[in-house]
Image 1: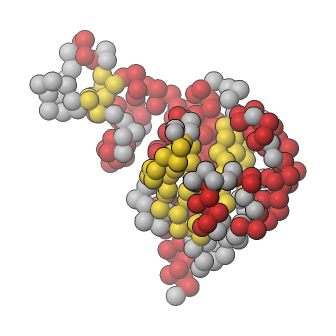
Image 2: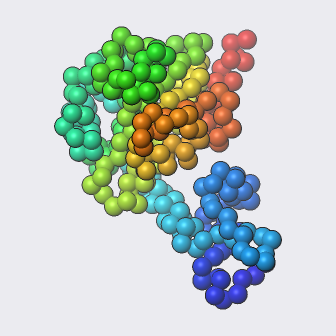
Image 3: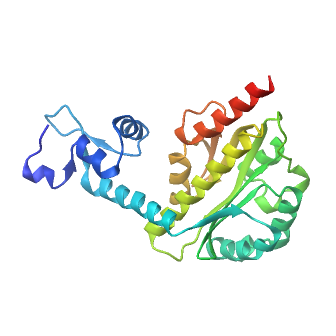
Length: 269
C-alpha cells in the first residue's frame, strides 16, 4: 500500500513504522495489539496506518534509552546510606510529608531487598520500592485507608523460595528536574532494572504471585498500563488501583522471570 504525498506527510504504513522503531513483524504487531502503537484505518482503506508524530516520538524515546545505556546510568539496590537522597527526591515530587526518612529506613531494615535506585552521573534520578507484604496491609493501602509509610513494618515479609508473595509498589518516582523525554527514559531504565532483578529472583526460586500499585498521575498510570498492569478500581477520584498477575501474565517483560522460575522448579524436582 502506498500513500499519496499529503497522507505520507502525516502517516507511516506498517513497514515504514517498523523500520523507524527497529521492530520485527511479530514485535510490531504485539505493540499494536497492546495499544502501544495506535493503528488508524482511514476511510475507504482496509489497511491501517500510523501517525508519523507518534511513531517519531516513540523512536526518539527508544534512541534516548540506548544513549542512556551507553553513558552508563547505574541501577542498583538501595542501602540505608542512600535513604537521604531518596527522601529528598520524594520531597521534590510529593512534598515534605513524603520524606518519611525514619519510616523508609525501618522498611529497608526489615527487608533489604525492596528498594532500587537509578543514578545518572552519581545523582539519584529515579527509584522504585516493591515490598512483599501481608494481604490486609496491601488492601489498606490500596483502598486509601492508610498511607504507605503509615503501614507497620511488621507487615513486611521476606522473599523465601517456594513461598508465593503478594507485593506492593509503594513508590515509583522519577525526577521532574529534566526534560520530559529524559524523564521517560529514566522510567524505562528503572523498569528494565526491576525486570532483571525479578529474573535473578526467579533463578533463586523466589515466587511473586501478584504486584499491586496505585497512581493518581497521568505518567504513573501510563507506565503501569504499558507494563501490563490491569486496572482494578478507582479508590478515590482520580486514584486508580492496578494489579499485575506475575505468574499468568503474557507480557513479554515478565517472560525472563517466568522462565527462570520454571527452570528453578524443574531443577528442584
